[in-house]
Image 1 (cartoon, helix red, strand yellow):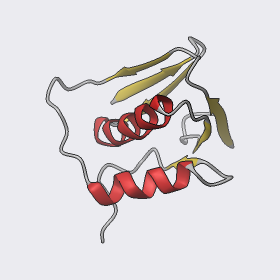
Image 2 (image 1 turned 90 degrees about the vertical axis):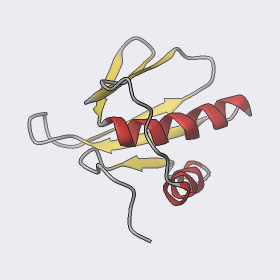
Image 3 (image 1 turned 90 degrees about the horizontal axis):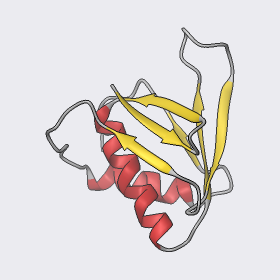
Image 4 (image 1 turned 180 degrees about the vertical axis):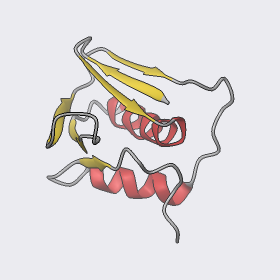
Length: 103
């Protein structure tokens, strides 16, 4: 299980496959100096509800992967995440998702 650390105050546990896709989308957005929201539903072991953070290129971000191996990326999943990042709702993560969606 990897982790995304944001602003030295938020840490989200994310599986390496999902994190690899998210990393590429975030880096692409930040390269363009674009900000957006990232949301996720809390896992069962956490207090209920969901969280949202405003991702901005000037705020420290750290991707931590458990595996040393690079993950194969799904172009369809990257496109889906990228499209979501441009919407008013931003990216909504399913933290239990371990593989790209079918189709």
